[in-house]
Image (tube, rainbow, N blue to C red; front, side, top):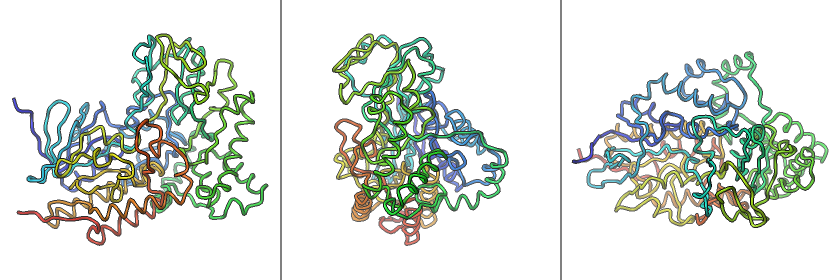
Amino acid sequence: MKPTQQTFDAVVVGAGFSGLYMLYRLREAGFSTRVYEAGGDVGGVWYWNRYPGARCDSESIYYNFTFSDELLQEWTWSQRYPEQPEILRYLRFVADKFKLRQDIQFNTRVAAAHYDEKANRWKIQLDDGTIAYAKYFITAVGCLSAANIPKFEGIDSFKGEWYHTGHWPHEKVNFAGKRVGVIGTGSSGVQSIPVIAEEAEHLTVFQRTPQYSSPAKNHPYDPEFIRKTKENYNEIRQQMRNSRVGIPLMRNEQSALDAPHEERLQKYEEVWNEGGFWKLAATYGDLTTNEAANETLSDFLRSKIRKVVKDPKVAEKLMPDYFYFTKRPIIDTNYYETFNRDNVTLVDVKEAPIERITPTGLKTAEKEYELDAIVFATGFDAMTGPLFKIDIRGKNGLGLKEKWAEGARLKTYLGMSTAGFPNFFMITGPESPSVISNMPVSIEQHVEWISDCIHYLHKNNLETIEARTEAEEAWSKHCKEVAEATLYSKTDSWYTGANIEGKPQGFLIYLGGVGTYREICSEVAAKGYEGFTLEPSSN
């Protein structure tokens, strides 16, 4: 029996922010579109990441769609930094308002997508054996959706329960009266540790790399603030789109080293007390390019840890020694304060690495810890990981994973396209601003550029669009040069793939700024999609 076949103008993978807006834009333009989503509902990363304390680190008034004035007026956020349940409610609201679910197939994984050169169509195979054909194949899989579960020896022998923060159960996990181990202190660890500590009998935190974290200073929104925000959103929207990171924020271009010591400390203190991290990044103009300038802020942040954590030895273990910003900045609520609790222990696994998981807990090089539950807050195989979960093959059967087998060979054009893969678009793909920006702003820009491109092809009777090799070579070279002019390239992080054993390393994010990137992409389109090969239809 042959598998069922379906044909669409476009197939989109993923129903988070990217997939929902991509579906809306293409459908509004008259293109038949089907979205395939592995989860049971819309939401993307916010469908899966339900761990205790899960919260966005961009302020909610900026972390939303801006394409619809009606939507902006109808939805009201409750607080400065929204929790996972509220973000998920928002995305469900969007799906309902625009009747998007009718074109989304849930609980469905895309196993493979192969380009058929004779038919100029993508053949998409689903995990249930169904085959779909589409002229355009678009990935909206997100940058952080492939969970990294370390291959610890003995994990299958553990008699307790274990969880990964990126694939949390839908029902509440009860840690009351339990000995819990949290492995990892990235964003999900920093957010979940204070919450779990309040419930668990004892919490042991296994830290490999200490993190800089600034207080969220979260609070409910005042109705008057919301009213003024909605009144002025046209101006806010423009500021977001033209900014460096998708937040309406002016950066002080002064060098941190030119400011008097006391003045600089006062400025850091003011921004610290406001909460969040975006303003910290804008305090001075050379914090991400000058080592000495960065150290002034890094040292200020370490001084905060010393003041909060009562035990000097524990405080010392929590001190980062890398440049601030070069790993993903984190915001928290009472993270450092949690290490003053009697029921919390910090274990440095750089000093004493984890050797294996045992039936009753975890063994490091120094000691065995008895645990009833383990939480893997070990992050994701970022940027390329979500794409590599699908067997994507372009012309001559070339696999995307094969093409990008070595980090130095990973090349894209604008972070949206790659040579050898016609009519294939990546929303917030490698070498776009993506994760070093307020994601909805970057997502909207990509979706609008891609949908406008598809409309252009249709209007001009063009069959395919494909990045030229020389264009992606030049773009990748530019991305690398911009990154190497900063401190980001001096630190191992999930930005570079260093968190995944054996993964080729390279900095895969465009650091030139959201506004600048938008201008570059617009100019490419205005010049008839310069850097692409466009082939006419044979009809």
